[in-house]
Image 1 (tube, rainbow, N blue to C red):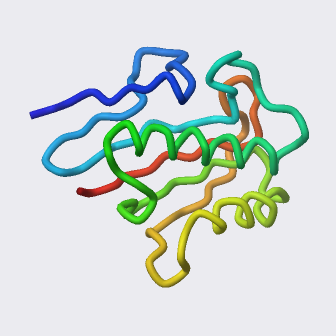
Image 2: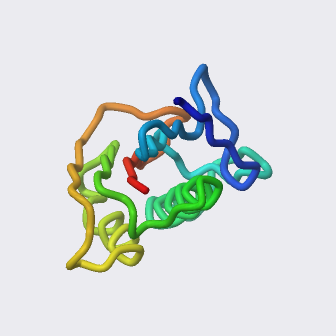
Length: 126
């Protein structure tokens, strides 16, 4: 059975989607961008601050599903500029143990919603 996961501690969706969907012991987390969930404004200070807010937002969605980063099995990172890879990777990596880190790809795209620099989506299992 499909269960919709929502939390006020992550930005509300800006389109016809949910923050996450839980089905068959698998949590599918929609892409998060660096929006402050309370103001719905993009955090300032560059890509590193955006990436940090993205990870905080993802953590909040995971917690709403009573899960954590240890249960993440797949991540997708979308960058508007591959030159930001190192900074985003540094922030992202601080949330995972290298030995148990999930599978991942990083993709450069032309633009992202609200012209942000980074968006990350995840899949986690119970």
